Structure formats: structure tokens, C-alpha cells
Image 1 (cartoon, one colour):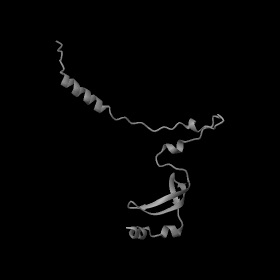
Image 2 (cartoon, one colour):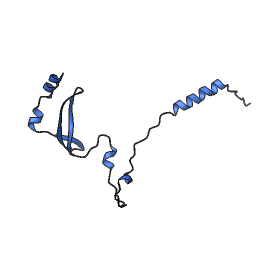
Image 3 (cartoon, one colour):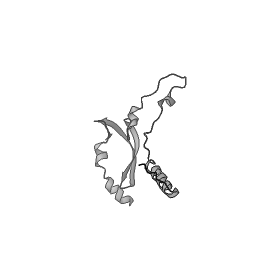
Image 4 (cartoon, helix red, strand yellow):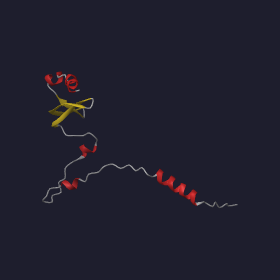
Length: 109
């Protein structure tokens, strides 16, 4: 024996809301089309951007950085970075390593 259910408008509304809230979150990866960077004369040479697909990836080189301690900027300077074991590493002199940024932080607060 087959039984037919009669759904009230209130029940249909609740089911609709439930279905909409379940499927509300979508996840997508950001994508940049490297064809936008082709040469102006129309050549098909496009750069390899695979290094930038990973978060916090940046080419080695000299960058101006802010040194922040506990949310307070204590210094701004140019720092050289290089790759060591696939991680960025700052190149600091002995003098730079021995700077007491905690003292500078305490003076600013």
C-alpha cells in the first residue's frame, strides 16, 4: 500500500530553507590567467606563475619590511631574503641580530 503525504506550506518552507543553508558554502581556489601577461606584440610567451600558487610564496630578493613586536611597528628596513630548504630566510648581519628590538618596543609604549 502506497501512502501519499500532504505537505503544508510551512513544512515546504522549512525544507527549502534547510536545503539552501546546507549548500550555502562553496570553496574555490583563486586562479590568475597568465595569458593576461603575454607580450604586447602577441607572442605566446607567458611566465611560469606556479611558485605563486602557494600561500606566502615570494621570490628571493631585497624587500622593505616592517619589524613588528606584539602589534607595534618598531623598525622599517630593507632585508635580503633567500631560499633555504624551500623556506624564505632573512639575511641578517651580527649587528642586526643583536639589536634589542624589545628595548625599542618598550620605549615606544
